[in-house]
Image (cartoon, rainbow over all chains, first blue to last red; front, side):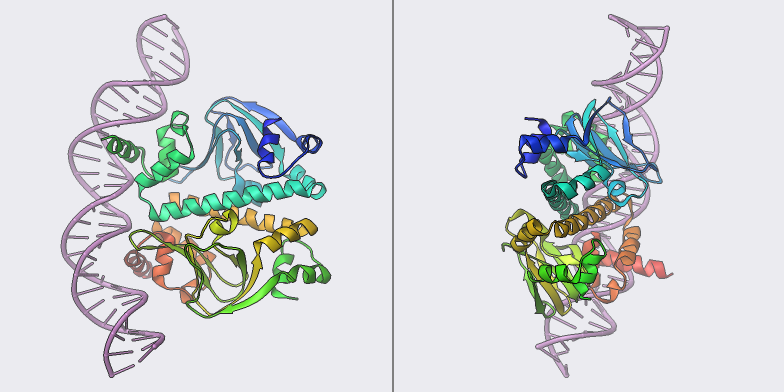
Length: 190
Length: 190
DNA sequence: CGCGACGTTGATTTGCCTCAACGATTGTGG
DNA sequence: CCACAATCGTTGAGGCAAATCAACGTCGCG
């Protein structure tokens, strides 16, 4: 079974024939490490399903500091969702931090597919519900957890991520400086 | 046109007859100030559309501090969405901070309706997309904005909210102490 | 009218940032 | 394949913003 088929099947039932018709609007694309998938100012027509690799979505503020919104690894979806959903120009970067094998899909194609196959819309509604829950939990964590606790939660929700991304990138996800993260980690060992 | 019909029409087209059939699964409920709609440990079967009034969703951490996830005013939807979507027991409080007139709808009824009326599912998918964007922006704001900037953004995105909720509740939404908020506001006036 | 909840102000403490220096590791060009 | 440069992670010193703790005035409600 195709990796995407398996992924979708976790949420809704789908015959091989149904999957084939859905899969028509997806296109496999490959990018090497450091490739910038999306940069500020662009219009964002696509979202991406990660077959293999790791990506990071982040912004750069006026003072030049990076702030990471999310990482995406195998079987995650990614894009600049602010631009993708609103049609506004992007303010985010989406960068491959490993060589990446992705499935690209155009929002327009997806919207048309929803009309023909309500099942597919159900799948994406379900995805959005899960994302909604994850975001709400993240906002809560930022409100009541210490930097150290947030670090611990992060590590357990993205297994093996430490081997795949730079520490300063993790720090920019947690909202702390790389120095601070370094100190938190050395404290934990003692 | 009914307030809910008007609200849904902003996103999808809906005839009067279609609205009537949808409206069947909604029930009007009224609560007075301080009523606790949802408390920790409960299962959450419903979400609510606010016809009139103001509600607050928050948690209380181990040290007894409150942390506000969201406020809901007229024409907003609210619930403990973590519990509502996952089926887990609630960890949040949803409290009426004014006398409230609400439309209650059961998730189960909504899911059945989706099968009959894909349009309705499209509406809620659209809602989720907007919420997703709002959350992503909020997470970004927390990463790169100062407390003062976040306060300013908050005030402009919830107009007149200052007259409706307590300052310590706003502070707990912004992730700062009431003392800090008080000082920020007195600075701004100068 | 009296009590409790709330908002404000002041004094003190602290968690985290900034700046800076120094290895270690990675990447690159000769 | 090696040498050098750039990037990254760590550690230390110093400073600042925001939290904490405490006191007091005020408002609203029972």
